[in-house]
Image 1: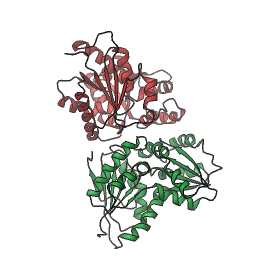
Image 2: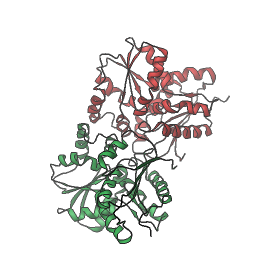
Image 3: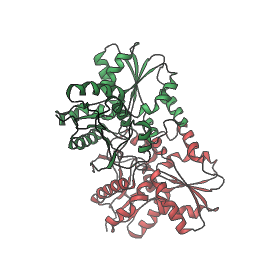
Image 4: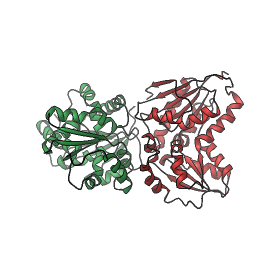
Length: 267
Length: 267
């Protein structure tokens, strides 16, 4: 096995960059290929069949690039497409956001009351709830879709006051006295970490699904082929469309910038 | 020529339904095929090349369905793809939103100060400005991109107070004393007509680009093959993905509902 083979990471847009930043921190010698499906972003408002189709097209592309594993850095795609991709590529480790995020949450909650926020597709899938309840039958899960968060983040408006009433609106039904942990079940949401933390006065543990996944990948990659060399890794980026804010958001978020940017068609 | 052939109308999502409603009113005997690219919505945040590619794929699909003309019921696609589609289909009338919207605006303005709001792609194209200035050299045009309006409309939140601060934000730089007319340069924006009208206290003429286009199509269709029969026309809808709110928004907006819904892949 060649440990120099890159890790493939994909998302619909900028959300997966929050996962990239954790991988850069935790696995600083790994080569990375990031794929952002910016021509078709967002995924989380669309049908499961559409998300499955798009996700497999990206997995095909990454496998062609000889990645050693794939991180689905998108909760909507993790919820709806991970089994589909694993079936097509049984010999490549495919890491999603849901299981590692749910497991980490179970290690954090004391009250057994947890919240999940995500896209419409992720919340409808009940993927977090199913996994949380499978591991801990006494868990109480409150789930809420927050579909406007993704466009605000894609527009780079995650620090703007404009999103405050939207946060108030989505969280209105969330009984904040009950939950002690909230899963940010969309890789775009860590951009809103400070806003959401302020909303809860810092009294709820916010779970970054991408950070939990990065920890999981680090642990499992060790078992088979983590790149240990003290080298400068490469960070390549493939996008399906130029977009307004991608690179300014990437600059704010990544530990080290991309070395190469490519625009590709995959459909 | 067979006047029973349907009119093809397309948009990225629900925006083109505002155009459908005007066509239903003004041309009540025409058969319509509506195409909503709901798997890839929105268009207006994406690159011109992406918009051109998607638009031609839809035009190919509609031509296969034997439409007698195509209405590009999306300003972003009108701005970036109309020449591309006309080049591929020189024998089929292709109607966009820009020219008819600009011409109608010129017939309305008295001060010669007009505003244009649209997606990032439409505003960057300067398509309205170029056409307005070509016809009237004394026109003064202020243009503003309002990229968050489309996701609010696609989520059905066009009557919600949540959008008020977003409207205030986008219009902050618009000198409302100057302009007497404002082009709603995105077919999603007529859903926000009341909100925007309230913002201006009814003192600015709001131009619905889709209504202007429907008038233009009615006039030109007369010349070649308007369906005059007193019959029940069919309204067929093709979507690339199921989405959350499409049909509830369609119900609010259309004069008569779709008879048939189909889900298709076109890429």
